[in-house]
Amino acid sequence: MPTPAGASCPLHPGALAVDVCERCGRFVCGDCTVLRDERALCTGCAAAVSSPSSRATLALVCGALGFVCCVPFPLAAIALGRIEERAIDRGDAPREGLTRARWAVRLGAMQLALLSLLLVSFAAWRVLRERLTAAP
Ligand SMILES: [Zn+2]
Ligand SMILES: [Zn+2]
Image (cartoon, rainbow, N blue to C red; front, side):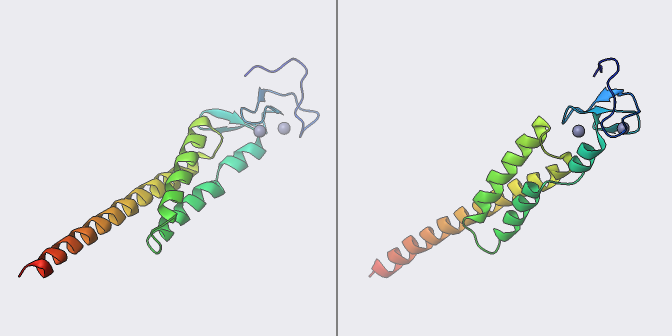
């Protein structure tokens, strides 16, 4: 991104700005520019986007808890994972959280599938038992 002539780095007042942070829009000098996923960021933003967001972690925790308690954790894991994936696509959340978000959605879907299988087999078992007891 081009910078206006004479703009200087907010962290190094003597240094001329060479770019604009693509996340927060601050001017950055050569020393402050960090390239991340082909985007030029300031050092503060680079630090903020380098670790998974707390939402990505929470989604994964819900995905894990779903094995202990079937409802409502799988639903929360899927919802949070999807929101996080979208935020990452928009560039609002760190890319590092993508694996966690995807696993959260996968685990949630797996648990819902298991749950419905369990319900179906329970219903089938009840029908079968009724038939057997009704028989003379
Ligand atoms: Zn920034
Ligand atoms: Zn600087």
